[in-house]
Image (cartoon, rainbow, N blue to C red; front, top):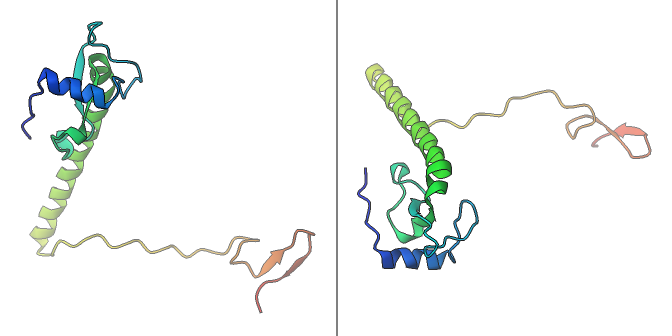
Length: 136
């Protein structure tokens, strides 16, 4: 996991100034003079490849970060880990069979019958209610 940078009080004030003292989660004012506790949130979590840079950081109320954002991040991180594990297992199976690992082929469109009245139908219906043959 990436190392997190520590934020000084001056840097925190700069972060809050950039956001105009508004919590991006609840939309309420973050007031340090009132005693609001502040957490620094990574918009794209470090565990999902987010950078530890100012562009990826926001200041949030502590309760917004803990009760709203963190559970969502945990769900996304768990999903990414499951997917990575599944892909690694697939790669192992392919290697065991001696087959090269290739990118997925795009799925081809399934041929189906033309819908009645659709563009693929040989007849078309006019607004007046009359039907006529489509094409030449």
